[in-house]
Amino acid sequence: MVYVDPLPDSEKLTRHYNESYYAEWVSSQRKKRECMWARRLKIIEQWARPGALLDIGCGEGLFLEVAKKGGWQVDGTEVSEHAANFASQRLQQPIFCGELGQADLAPGSFDVVTLWHVLEHTTQPLDTLTAARRLVKPDGRLVLAVPNVKDRIMQTVYRLIKGRKPRLFSLGDKEIHLYHFSADTLKMMIELAGFECLSIHPDFGIVEPSKKLINFLAASIHRLTGAHCYNAIQVIAKPT
Image 1 (spheres, one colour):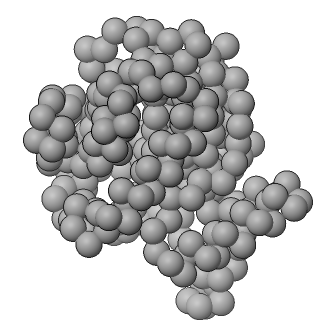
Image 2: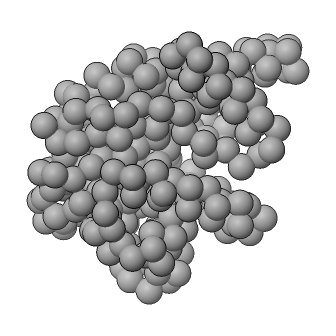
């Protein structure tokens, strides 16, 4: 497992996810991100019928908007006060602001629990997954995505363009990733939390055209060889 040690102060991390962090998501990228969320929802619906859905780390709430329009009963949690307030206003329903373990959510009450590029930002990812396990129905599904630390194709292109390897961590980065998962380490942690992985495959959450093309190439290599060399990992799992 690749991770940051020592971990940054939790309060500083929470303050990092302010209005400027979400600015492009709610303006110039909104339409592209709406299409991305619609694609992801279609994947979920291959595994579960519309029911109760919880999105952990729901950000500005666009995925919940898309799911709600698709007939899902939605809830969300979010550590960013700005994002939680924004999502609450857009959805016209309360979004819990704080850590998942602090939320007053009934055990076994969700058909699907999602974590879209959230786990790598948490200081205790196993605790987060364990808390999610308590909330999923016995026949429910966990759906999550994280960046892939073994994203060999994108990393090679980055080195060619920038002349250096991509860094894994800096407090000055927009995306502060504290844990860096491979397909193997992610699978192990999900299983430790009480889930069985049903599918491990590429996540197509990139909205930038050039990076989408590179990721498509990496995903094609995965389909041909089985190598997990793509940009981000998406997992479908069920409780054991």
